[in-house]
Structure formats: C-alpha cells, structure tokens
Image (tube, rainbow, N blue to C red; front, side, top):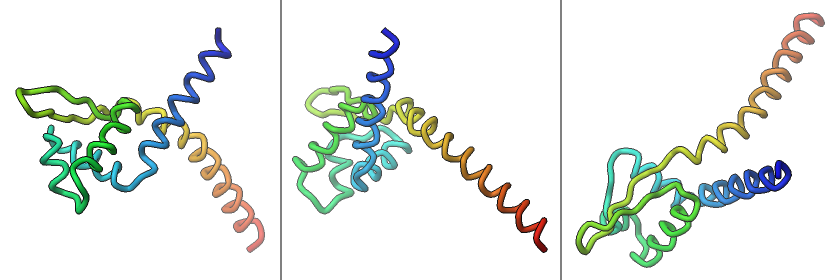
Length: 113
C-alpha cells in the first residue's frame, strides 16, 4: 500500500512539473493568480488561437492547477495553487543542499584566508 502511494505521489508530482514546464502555462497561472477569468479573457493575452489556449488549460486542469466552472455559455477558470506544494517540497530538499554547500564553502574560505 505505501509503495503504491509513493508511486502515486511521484506520478502526480511529474504531472504538475510537466504542466508548469511550459512558459505559456506558467503565464496562464500568473494571470489566474489575480482573478478568475473566462477562457476568452485568458486567450486575449496570447498571440495564439483560442483552441491552443484551451489545450494548455486542459493540461493545467488535468494537473488540478486550474478549476473551471460553467456560467451560462462561458467557462470561468480559477487557480488552484495547492498542487504546487509538491513542487515546493521537492525544491526544499535542494534548498537544504545549497545551504549546506554554501556554509561549507564559507567555512573553507574563512579557514584558508
């Protein structure tokens, strides 16, 4: 059970990383940080077709980073930042590594002045 859960967590994290790897998708997330927007409002910020923007939004929805709600004939999108905690947790391990590395370098430099 724990082994399967670990694979599931890694798979979810990989989906999130894949979603934020693209600069267009990161820009969409930044747009949604300020307010909910329709697909048309989001698309107006890009020099690409609305179907292309919709494809990016589908991938962001599959990573649970964007939530869409129908309002009449439009779809309003909002940011769900909670899955980004997985990215933060992964980066925290490297932050510890770099902090330790820099402290070691500082000690070395101070010792060898």
